[in-house]
Length: 302
Image 1 (cartoon, helix red, strand yellow):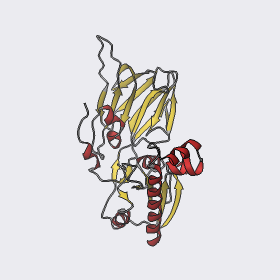
Image 2 (image 1 turned 30 degrees about the horizontal axis):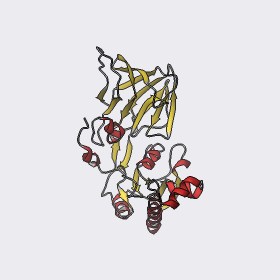
Image 3 (image 1 turned 135 degrees about the horizontal axis):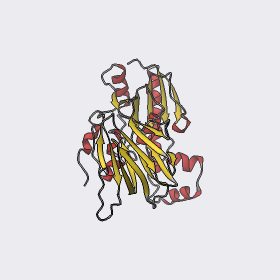
């Protein structure tokens, strides 16, 4: 693939935000005291900055034009580039994916001491080789399924790459909704419901007990958290796999419910009577990701 223009989307480290920008007194005090809760953040920041600088040197050495932006600066859909590179961890990759429709994306894990980087094919020491492989077509993108959400009939802007969590906005309160699949309806009381893609099947939904899918699978799954089942009652739809053509419809029975998309940063109110329709999207993400990356999670949690 010819790569001549690149958009680099990078995170701000915890150290950068709390110590350098906001100068939070408690954070700085804990850092000076060597408190365990903050001791690794400076190391992670240094690793991140070294990765950013190394990446920029590699792009410059190849004559590739690039623009670097913070992930919170991204608005709308990215166009006019050959490649999008996220620099951070999985959270940065997820945030960047929301702005990508047709362009390929590569994740670079900028701090191996603090980030797992499941979606990140590259690190500082492998970026140059992987970039060469991309330009020579020695590696190819894979298609990663994304979900489309319609809230009260209106399409939500962000395509879901990991999962959507439907829950009460108070974590101590009961999540209540009506669920409909294939024309069958069921009332649920629980602590929330995950609806996850294959890419997201290694995350929160796996921790809850769901199945890990190959990252390039075209099914998606749902998993009800801590369903409240009364004596003598049974529920048919507490977990399951759905083909790409199927949909899930939820109707809120909560005054202050919420939808959380790909983590905590993106949320929408889900008030009493609101409806959410979840379907497999038609615009998969084209990503440079190891197609076997989910294999390390190839067991069930019971």
